[in-house]
Length: 164
Image 1 (cartoon, one colour):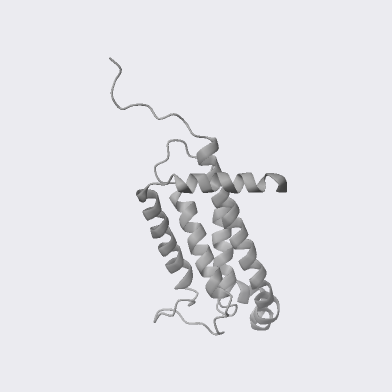
Image 2 (cartoon, one colour):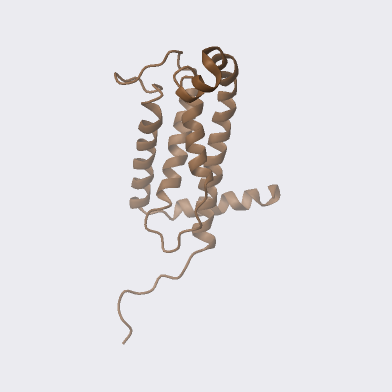
């Protein structure tokens, strides 16, 4: 499996190189939307609607950026393709894990109900960096799968003009 990784990454790069401006625009829009959907409620992006009870940690910022970029690429793979590769759940799971990873451990109601305040700080907070790594890895896997599927599963595009 690892021996085919360079070839798989080259294929994903080939798919990216073939993207139209529409696809790149969709990727940029998807990245911006993801950054807002993850960054605002977790208060990694400071805003007047949400606040944190614990400070934002240094690794929350690169996690948010990586999540937004990879999610933008994954979302753009769903824009107008002749043959869409089979959908994968790794992108969705990666997005949810990222949200849980960068969020304030004491602000997460589910964690508070399950572990209490002291458990949120002593049990949940230490595993959040690992959730961040897992989320970025799952989003990267989803992006590579979707991109390689665009090359491997390419179908011929038929002419719009009827044959004479």
